[in-house]
Every structure is written in structure tokens, then in C-alpha cells.
Length: 439
Image (cartoon, rainbow, N blue to C red):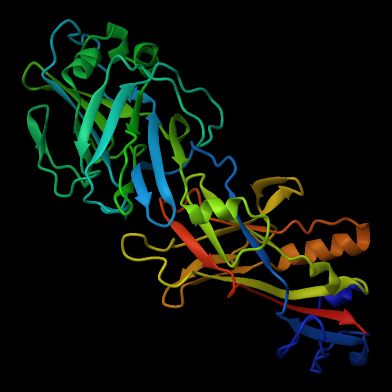
């Protein structure tokens, strides 16, 4: 009988409440099943309880792009994001002149999509660039991780976080045009360090990383007023043309250039930190009760935990078959603008277990109709959670196990990478379930 219920195709939908659902009569035909023994129901009056909680251990490496900058969001408070990246050899030289003084050195990193920026792009920011003193290893890094740096060698950049229409720069004896991005002149001391490494450092990446393990780019702590600063999304891992790729250009002997590249997604790390949060968020984080307004923040910041406390009442009389389960989240009005735009996509996860709020993929997460894309104009996100709901109810009835630990609404770590945030109006959050059960 259970398999027959799962095979039902329903035609027509009517509104029903969870407390007093009515049967829907329709043209539902199951081989060997009397139509009078089947009910089709729809309910949308679930109790939903939402809270703001801190994010837990998002990956910091093996992601497509990296976020950089410092921001004081008027709704969230300060956020900072740093980059750590391993260097590699692009064009090896066997007889590199490592006993001379360099002319100069430039660091360039292209921005993703020309203007992928969150916040006030005109704010002057201060960045510190240091060599790494700790090597990357083959492991998963998290956005709470950092690498040790050589603070005796340092460059300081002060200016906008990215530049549009950068002037052409020299490469060998030609000029190359750079895309939009950040261009930093490194200090004379930093250039000298790059010029005077042991000779094997210019021959292979393995030789280079014995003596120059990579760089860190860190926003200096500053007291930016609310509404100042911003976060840019940069592509440090591309291996396109010399002009387009991220690189360090070392100039010597007037016309010669040596290029250091960067060594891929596994060997680049985004570190982020947040706070102090605004008083509203601090209050919510300490409040265990359901909240009408909740907060979501990228870069290991904040997420919303949604509980459905009476969900299993649907199956109190035995197994039911879920035809469709959808949940919709609306942005708070006037909580976003062109500088603080709404995330183009959100993710919906489930907690790893009843005592761990690590994000775990729901059964619907890998399906094509999962959803989560912003409905612009209406300013909401919709998710299909049919398999998630079915699993909770089936395991409750058949195994007596309670997996009803709620859902976690988050901003993606990748695809897209973004420095954005969202504020959710939970008074508009709605879960609609259509299901069939025997009478």
C-alpha cells in the first residue's frame, strides 16, 4: 500500500489548514485502489520558529574566488576578509640575476565581473601585504584559519579596493592592458626580497616555495564609520594570459620582467572575521526565542535556523506521501539597495544532527528544482523541500526516530562567491505541503 501512495498523481489543489484539513475529491486513479480510500490534502498553517545563529566552519580554500576588504555595514557592523595565497613559477629562468637590485615590483589581482563589489567602492582602504612564513599543506582550510606571515617584510597599500580602466603596464619590452582589479606597488624591500632569492627559486615552483611560500593581503583594522568600506570579489586563481591573470611582476635591468603566479584554489585561503555586531544582532544571538527578523551573512558570518515544531503531527495516524513541499523566505522591506544588494541566491541546509549546527545537504539540495534563486521584484526565495519533509515523517513513523532538527538558511560559499548579506522577514515565511494519506 505504501508504494501505491507514493505513485499517486494529484490533479487540482485547494487550501487547507493543518489543524482541520479537508479531503479533496478529484480524478485520482490507482490500479486496484478504491478512490474513496484516498485523500489529498494541502496545508500552509505550520508554526515556524526562526532564530539568528552564528555560521559554523565554512571552507576557506578550494573555492572559485576570494573576497577582500573591510566593511562597516550599518545593519550588521564591521566585517573583514583577507587573502592568503601560495605562489608558483610561470616562466622559469635558469640563470636569473639574483645578485642585483630590482627596479620595482607590482602585485595585480583582477576583480570578478569588472565590478563585483559590496558596499561603498569609493572608500579608501588600507591593506598590508606580507610574505608567508608558513607553507600551505594538502588539507581543508576554514575561513577561521590563518597562515603565519613574515612581518619583517611588508608593503602597505592605501587607496580604493579596485581600479577601473587601469593604465597599461610594462611586460618585458611591451605594454599590456590590465582588466579591472587591484594594482599595488610593492615596497622596495619586498621587491629586493623577490629579486635576491636563491637561484633555484626561479627554476621550479618547489624551489620557489622553499624560500618564498606566498603572500598574505590583510585589511588593516580601522574604525570605519557605518556605511563605509566594502568587499570585493577577486580571481587570484585564473591562469589566463599574462595580462589577465593574477600575478606579481618583478622588474629588473630596465626592460626585464619576472612573473610569479598563484598556485590554484587548494592553495589560496579566504580568512574572514566579523564584529562587533550591531546591538540588534547581539540581542538576537543571545535570545533563544523565535524572532520575526533574522540575519544572514556571508563569509562565516550569520545564518537563520528555522524550526517546524509540529511537523510530525502530519503523520500522527501513519505514513503519508508528500506530493510537494515548498518553503518561501521574503527579504525585509528596505533592507537592501544598490550598495548592499540582495544575494542572488541562498542555500537551505539541515543541521548535521540535533546537537551540531554544521550545514548538511538536504535530500533536495542536489535536485534541479531545489530553488533558492532570488525572485527579483517580489524579493523572495523559494525552495523545494519535498524529500526533506518525506524523510522526517517516514523515519518518525517507521523507525520512531526524530530527525526534525529544522533548516539552516545561508548565503552560498561558492557559485556565487559574494560579500553580501540578507535580512529576512519571518512574518512572511510560509511552508506549503500537499500530501496524500489513507482514510
